Image (cartoon, rainbow, N blue to C red):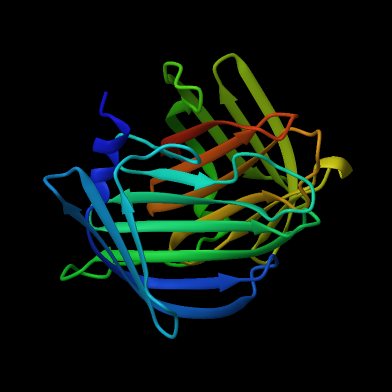
Length: 271
């Protein structure tokens, strides 16, 4: 197993792209060009992050270790964010995928009352490489059967778990989306309505979830309202190629504590 630091090193380079802000309903707010440099200092003992964004002050951070609110997978994908859901404080997380010369990052932020407030989609490619981008995600892109492998890593550093997954997505005769997710011995089936770029899982009034379909094959799954004393998860997906998708899930227990991070890599086997 690579160490967390070695996994962090997978992200070295100069990443050019933009930060695109959306409302909770997926409405475009603004787009800010960006250039992020991750470079080694002192023979790999330190990494410097320099973020330059148009119209904003540059941000410089030095890392000599990683941990706390941040966990990496071996391929360099990571998530960082709130460790604890607490009353009257902002809550949120960043998810980052990496594939060849591209990264896709997405930040979900909830306001002090627990309502989804904004999302920021960050699309990046290594400097001096082609800027290839997927079209905006459509429901049709997701329909079918996806076979995957999931890796779950834990905040308490217990051994990672690796297991297979099956995700089936289809439309019924009324146009509702039917989702069936199997992992380990469990199968969870749920249904949703589709309205434009929003998939709304609305059967449980206490736990209403939405999936927002975004540019570059991205999707953001989040509760409309995060509530104390209820377990919850945040998820981001990236359709890298028509038949290849990754999803990352950040899970919190009913005390509001961040417990684990899961990366699913799945391939479409049936359309």
